[in-house]
Length: 311
Image (tube, rainbow, N blue to C red):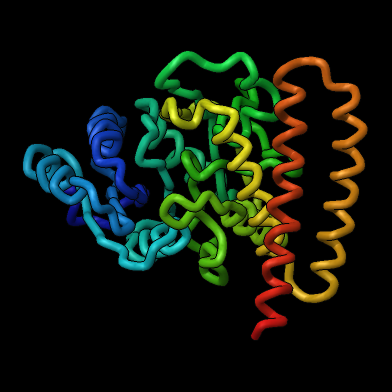
């Protein structure tokens, strides 16, 4: 493709870890995108031990004339490290992140290019994420419990993200200039099978602090696979526990730790009262998850204090 010789309009970064079969479906879906010739695809393999490398090699051999695909093996374990590698390798002024188990709609890439092109003040954007459940959706998966599953629908209008809500890593895009001063923090984000989080929120917080605009666009839509293994109460409770760990990891210095303890105490009080009022299965599970988040925070702080004393 002659367009490959030019600087791409968008660099699409797909970070992957041991999900070769799902990755193949995602790569195949890219072939249907409008304006694919104007983009480069960067697959960052974060130390996969399955057949990821072979899958990418096979896909490139079959479709290399139709898509500008680059492969990078990132030795440093962690989603933040993988994303940072993709940013460094990118050649476009706009970087879009897509999960290795997400299927974009045909207008996904075109929407990203047009929106950034028509809005020079725009720093970042995200869009609708619909779930693709491997098995039947549990009855308790409603309301606030949808967010850990990256289920998001802010309606049919183009709008700024409300305070406290950001694009999800499964479906987000930023100008490369947003990473001129900061990258994804390596102490946050998933590492292998450890469900740490908070790295995306931290980056978007920096964007807002610098006066950046973050927009939601309904036509930047993807379908996101949710495996059966995640549709259990045990998984979602562990997800909240790890979220609590992430909160503790982000706290720095005396002031940061005091603020974290105050917020944790307030959460415990609110959740204790709300637990007395909960009637539905989903609401009861949400309260259990929130207590797990508190436990994750306290365990992490306790372990950090023990390590400091031992050191």
